[in-house]
Amino acid sequence: MTYTGEVVVGGPADLRVLDELEVRKLAVGPMSNDTYLLTCRATGDQLLVDAAADPERLLALVAEGGAGRLVAVVTTHRHRDHVGALAAVVAATGRPSPPVPTTPTRSRP
Image (cartoon, rainbow, N blue to C red):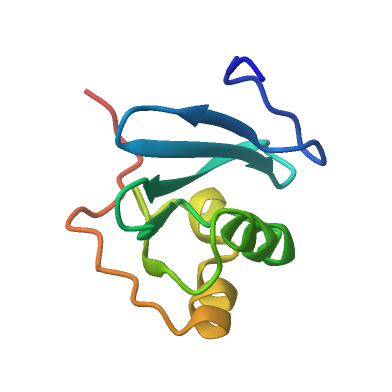
């Protein structure tokens, strides 16, 4: 399978295999947010990035990458469309979600 990075809501995850890392990309939610599952090829440790929506699909993505090895769930920023499934995924997995060190603002430079 050739990695294109193109994903659609309801469609399958796209997988990119690098020397040391597997990157799974999945589109979720009404805003078609991208969620990533990073898996270390040496250890199997996983990091879920932006649990935006559809917690059931995100948990299935984690299982696809090797259930039981999720280390943490991180969020790139705290906008509502990036954290919609965060509480459900953290509750289901028991994995930590480190705090985001920034506060969203409405103004832009």
